[in-house]
Length: 281
Ligand code: C2E
Ligand code: MG
Ligand code: MG
Ligand code: MG
Image (cartoon, rainbow, N blue to C red; front, top):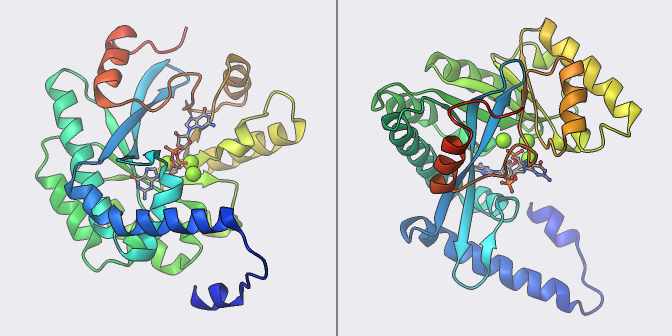
């Protein structure tokens, strides 16, 4: 990281860059307190099983309500959390909060799997697997899926494989996120103890017009099914994309067309509105 930074020379004045750096420094210094100050919250986005039209799970997506900046997206602060080491307490907060919400939903009659995103940095924590395993035993009927991006695993593929094997022993499901954006080999993917592959939204967005993407998705789905993975498509924004994905035998879809990520109260309303589980017409 330092080598990369020192290579970068600023040879003219860039006010935009200064503002960006100032914001970044502010976020960096305030992220740690954000956890204890209750500025972080989880939103939940439904995942729909295409053969039953029912909700099969929820993905927990973190939000930071910053006092001055308003809504800060995870794409902006997760990298900061990773660089500063805050990713460790942050992920632990996410896991506990997701389990708390799952318990709350269960008490209201909704027995739903929750997906949690973790960072590759978490895999380097000595006690990560034992933390997960303890968090699960403290919960009644945990149904947890852990999502990890394909690209992040490539930083240290052997370590990732080893930790994922230990993690799968704890009873969590494992999901490979943003699939199709990295360069992992089929030989590597097939070794992973993963249950699920999530095709990246960039490949899903223009599925209606892009024949090339359709071919890639079709091949990916066939290949992954043969390897025993469940296929999830993220970034589904229209009925036409739903139809194409049904034709291609995709198992699960997620996207704004079904629902954006929702805070817990709105999610409960959404679940009540679809009357149990018939999420798609
Ligand atoms: P992701 O795990 O791939 O999550 C999917 C992202 O796509 C989410 O962005 C979601 O809001 C967005 N999305 C869902 N459906 C649609 C759609 O139909 N169209 C479009 N354009 N976007 C859609 P979000 O919530 O901003 O999260 C961005 C990324 O930040 C996530 O990508 C994940 O990698 C990371 N992230 C989120 N929450 C956490 C967390 O608790 N821990 C960690 N380590 N990373 C997180
Ligand atoms: Mg994800
Ligand atoms: Mg993704
Ligand atoms: Mg992503």
